[in-house]
Length: 271
Image (cartoon, rainbow, N blue to C red; front, side, top):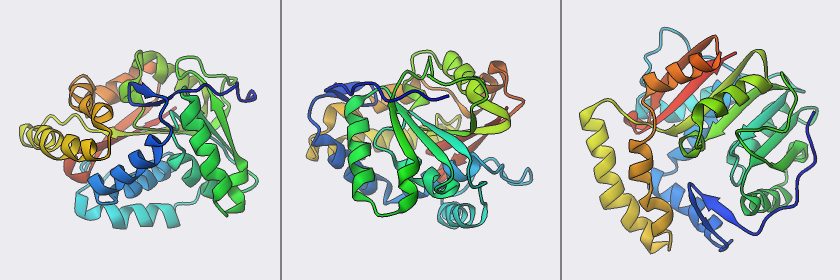
């Protein structure tokens, strides 16, 4: 079973950088909208939907950017999770995926948002208080470690991870922990930047980070928080490597899907 939230610390983290400037969180969220032209919201909806629904095997592993919006809306509106499910948003940050999960499982369900950053959780709790949907009352924010989750075995019906696995020090251990807390037959959906095996896509991504992302971030006062992206993506895993990671952790199946023209990726793994 879950444990109550631990006392929140005075720091917040974006990626691997920490600061005590809580005002950076709304700037970070606003910059995400600008950089992705709002598409990050669609990718997050897809991530949540795929934690409860596996895309058709006949569909290519590359989801073109032109399909993103329609696919996200279709999944979010038409693929229904069971009311009353208990779900985990790991590395939840300020709560975007947790809020989407909450709408899926309803008032009878439970959503646990876990993050190691107390300030991020404070921001998530503040956003929860400001939102009107009754289902958001089913979200609990817990300060915790992705490598040592404070839950019993086979506790969750679904797990999502949004832009968090890339920054975990021990990814194999994190995947084993996700597997441990998932019920048999349940799924994990992991959204992050894609480390593309395509030279063109990788070159485009690298150019965009150097010439668009970091310069724009500097105008928001977030240069350091985004400078690390290029190196962190280069040290991340390709889609095939993520599939292998999940299977070696014990998942029965794993499939990686490219989003946003290959700039983003989503791993769907079934226990």
